[in-house]
Image (cartoon, rainbow, N blue to C red; front, side, top):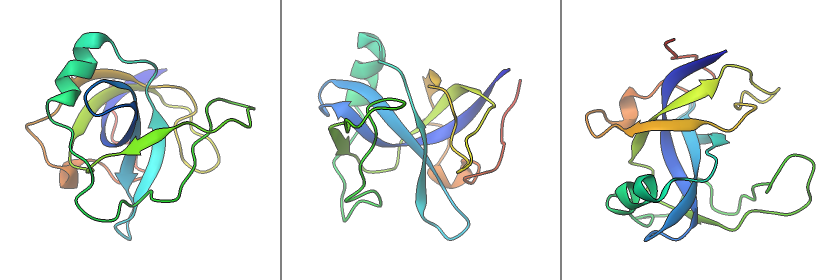
Length: 131
């Protein structure tokens, strides 16, 4: 079952000028940005739209020093570029989660949410979805 919800862009693959995929997060109750999942490859139009608003981190990034797997069951790590976690996107997610609370399957973006702030995104582990 798929549903829509919001998430925060925490990092990208590719470059800030041409992001290929986005790694998404949500804040937990302690105020830490937790990784929730990632998007499959972005369309060129979606990548251009994000490139216009993504910024490099202003301070130390919450995911500094983290590694992200390139795929299920692989030892390869993604080459990610952290971004300032201030961009919210609406995504379609499969409601299945793994044991850590992350979405088990890649998400599909619907739109960039410039109308809401990161503080309005549901917290990590909260459903916050609509069907």
